[in-house]
Structure formats: C-alpha cells, structure tokens
Image 1 (cartoon, rainbow, N blue to C red):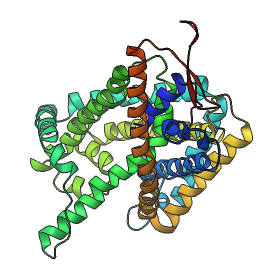
Image 2: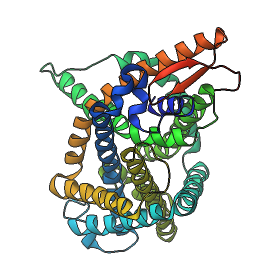
Image 3: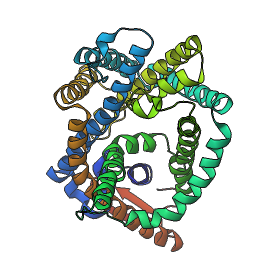
Length: 390
C-alpha cells in the first residue's frame, strides 16, 4: 500500500519520494509544514524499530550460527541465547559492513551483496528440495495455501479474548504473539519497504506492481515455509529428530535440523553457508534501511547522501538494536515496535483513501479527455493547453 501510493504520487504527480507525499490529495499544501514533518518523523521511527526487530532476530540467529561453526561458547549465555559479547560482536560486523556498503552506493556494495544473498537463498532452497522432506513440504504447500485463502476472511475479523478459560487465554496469547505481532511488524516495516518498492517500480502499471510486489513475494514465502519448515515438521513427526528441533531455540533450529539431516562435516559446511547468508541478508537489510531513512529525512531526495549522514544512521541503528537486546532482549524491541506501528497504521489507512481518491479522479479526467498538469508547489490541477504538455 505504501509503495504503491508513493510510486503513484511520485511518478504521476512529480511529488518527492517521501512518506508525506502519499497523503497529498487529503492534506494538500499543509504537508509542506509541520504536519508533513510529523508524518515523516513517524515513518523514520517506525523504520528504525521495524528494522531493529528484524536485526534483533537476525543477530540472535547469526550468533547461534557463529557458535555452531566453532567461534566459541562465549558468544552464548547460560540460557543458550546470544550473550552481551556475542551481540556486540555481531552488531559490529553487521553494522560495520552495512555502513561500508551504504557508503559505496546502490550500484556497488548493495548490488553485489544482494546478488550473493539471492544466490545463496536459492541454493539452500534447492538443497532442501533435494535432501529435505519434499513430498511432505509440497503437500503442506498445497493444503496450506487452500486453508489460508479459505480462512483468511474470517481470520481478519476474529479477535480472541481471554475469557478466563484455558482455551480463551491460550488463543488470545497466541493471536497476540503471532498474528497481531507480525501485522504490526509489517506496518513498521512499511515505510522502508514501501520507499524501496517505489524506487524500483518506475514505469510499471498498478497491475504489474501488485503482481511483482505482493503476489510473487508471498508465493516465494509460502514455498520457503512449506519446504524448509515442512522438513522440520516431518522430521519431528516421524521421530527422526526426536525433540531436538522443537526444544532448540528459534535461533538455532535451522542448524539443529541440518545436524539431523547431514553428517557432522557436511552439517558444518552447510552451517557456514547459512551464516554467510544470514550476514548478507542482515547487511542488505541494514544498508538499504540507512539509505531509505536518509531519503525520507532529505525530503525524498534520491541522490547520493553525505558520508556523515550514512555513518550517523548506521551507528544509530546499531546502538538501538544493541541497547534494546542487552537491556530487555527481543521483548523490548517487540514492545517498542508494536507501539510505534499504531500511529503509522493510521497513516497507512489515510494513504489508502488518498490513493483511491487520486486514481478515481484521474480516471474521470482521462475518460473526459482532459490532460492534467500537476503543480506540487500549489497542489493544483490545471488543464493542459497542448496534448504533450503533461
């Protein structure tokens, strides 16, 4: 929704590629003042906390991978989660690499890391297609997609509340910890992903955008969850893995599954590949976030950003993640992220209304044969004098 709104108003109305532009049909020139600044600030905070949530989970899994490949027991604490020293090491590596990548620009470091990331992702997916529970995973994919589409309308409007019974409490807790949490996570991620999608969608139709930004990525997620997650489920159900996978922390379950499938030496080599994939994924997420935050803060300017700005936001993002993880763990990041997702959810709702209003009015004008010159400085639409004046 955010990416489509930004792309529409940026490329059809020549507005800056920043969050406030998505509300132009509703607020007009007032977006040039404090109202627009508040909207962009909310978007920046949401981006920082949304990316912090992703980095928080990633850091935990990255540290578990470092332990698996033999870095040492000191990266974990007594509970088996990342220690303070492990968190600091991981953030120094991740944020240092992401800052260097952002400094090199989109065409160099970010491009190379993204290509490596995609290659390793498909390699691991292919590995599980060959050596994992392929039939079980494909069955889960088909049945799961059917169940998803059948139950989605009801799920969207169902809120389980604790009613004092064991079932009520369990359902309410599950929905809050999973459905609501992930919805809030994606809302907080929306400014970051939205600006990114808008930047790469110039020249596309709305139909092409929906296909490329929503349907294809969702299908890839379904396939990944079904094949990789399905393998873990199948190994547990048939007794091959025993309780080793479900008793491991979420950060270590992939590595435990590899230990079940492969010999010790093969599992170690695959663990190295997974650690590299995690590193490239976290670095590309962080460096892209730094560039997007700078784009929003500069009023939609997509040009190269100054080194001090990139270094500042790279450092700030690393400090936020590190402080929240050390002080309160993932729960602290989750709480902060959910709180900030609320105000931005209101911005997203208004963006949807603004986009529908703009598309409706533009379609009426096109049917009437009226061409439009859009003047961002006055937020005014006027008739063009010549056919090529737009």
